[in-house]
Length: 124
Image (cartoon, rainbow, N blue to C red; front, side, top):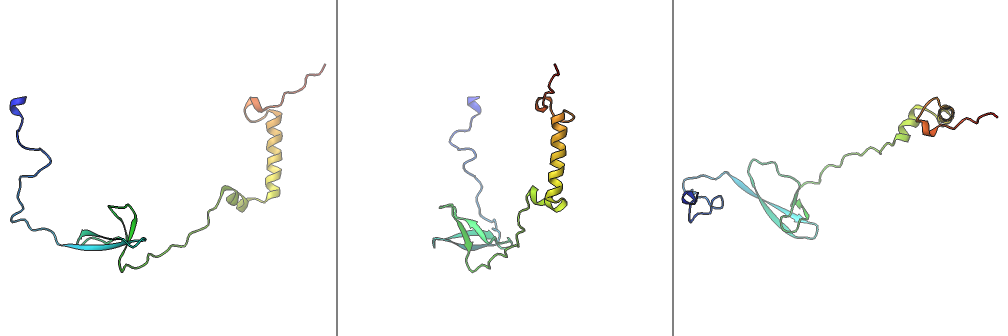
């Protein structure tokens, strides 16, 4: 195997192709600014859709597009909990009645796991 090894070349690290005669795609430099005032540029293709925010490769902070329009904020619906959805279907008095019925069934042993049933007192 040693006789088949390529010597003097770092495989995968260098390309032996030259760039003569190769026409690069048209590019543009996009400038972003971080909240702390630091600016950085990103090279993108001319036909690329430019994002409003980009992470600074050096600091990791999010930068906003210089002279970019503010993003449109969507109206957020309030979070509905299970309780809210339940109250849309039933009133609290109805829920109290259902709870009482189900607890009676559970305690009598008709429903639920056996370890939750109340033991019936033996008559002597």
